[in-house]
Image (cartoon, rainbow, N blue to C red; front, side, top):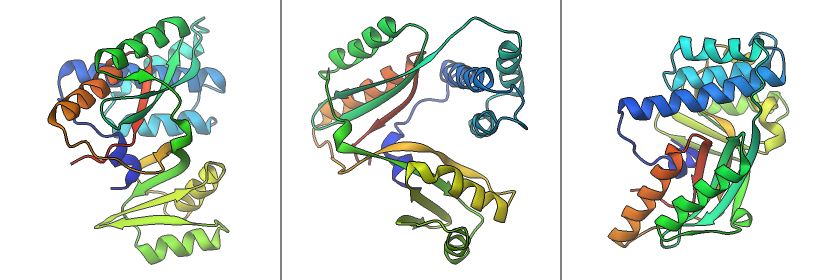
Length: 237
């Protein structure tokens, strides 16, 4: 289903606690998007995209509505984007994207996750590249290529995996690609729809202890309230 999906996905049990974390993270992201612009998805493209993603993750309408109403109510909550990089177990490298109202708390919590699993914070950003990523079904390869060519998109990379097509573009092409696909097929649903960090080279963990520690690290990070997304370079089985 595409590299972006693969490099981020570490299985988490579908417990009530896991769902609660998903709700909280999307609630925060929706609030920030609504606060930054008009709190109406029909007039705020960024908010509309976040809501679409939330619905794909089965976030309830009530959670979405409360986050928007909170933004409308003039809440004083203020969140800033923060990014942390680090080395995990074995050859793993990770990028952690956060939304936080307390940078000191967030970096301390992220550092603790790395330290407890044999890793450490450090610079790895140069080992990743940022790409606009779209994964979807409902269009053929030829249809997709024709849509993007007619829209003037200089497409350099894509993958076809059974019924799924994944498009990779430059970050600056995100809106251009998304608009072209949606204009051609308004009902198109995206499995992946983001600007993501992809590793320049994947790595594999062969030691069972390293695999266990890596999965523990990713799960610990994803459980933090301030963490929105975790990217890594590990090729998953």
